[in-house]
Image 1 (cartoon, helix red, strand yellow):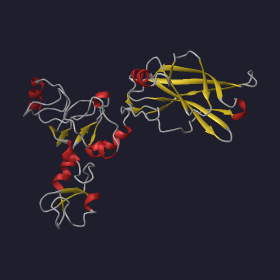
Image 2: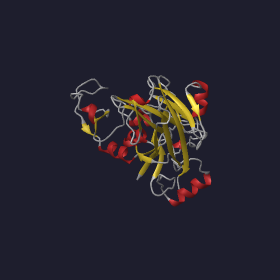
Image 3: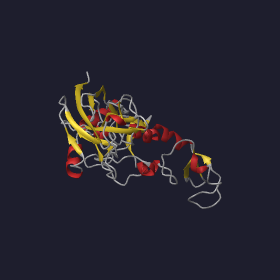
Length: 317
């Protein structure tokens, strides 16, 4: 069975949203184009001798971890796999007019038996051969260069990339739009948001004063992990404070935090919470965390909340 390789992962892949996630203006990255006529595995960087040995073994099929067995690997322009009307991936059932113009099922049902290319009446019929080709295609993830080694059915590529662990995160600062990866946040914040971030060291408490109207504060760890102190106004009860980590990629570290709020009126009165840090890839606004510190409105003064925070890090075994 033939498997098709789609080498279209960018060095800095975009966030896949809407129709644009299906259209690719750039060709293969430098160094990834296979020699003309080469019958090769989709595993990048094989020497000619390896390819020759693979030919003697027979067809190959690429697996998620880079191993190969059974199947044939070829290259194809991804745009030919998109519907020419909605630009989404072609998914069976597929229909074509007498001249071979293809439309996906969703668009075909809206054409009223009139071809969108021929612009004349047409009798659409199923294209079984193309359906089998589409169903056989396995594609690498757009974020392969960032660590994702999954090979998925091409028709399910968009669904996978929307939830992919290695997809970039969007900067939480309103109106920024920068897409970043864990380990690359410091350069962005020091350049664009130096006044909006607080750097800290793990296991060392630090003091924070957060204005009651500010929805979150940004903390940057010494290893470049990005944390958000969320301030969720829960009227009429008070402020729900929690810490989340904005990160992608392999989750090799576990984080926990301690947060302590001190009363402005009576400093001897304190509220404390120790909890695990919640991981998120996108900051889509405030939301109730599984654990949070509820600070009543009467506990803080009218303008800010005094906090003492410590974030701890431990390796995942």
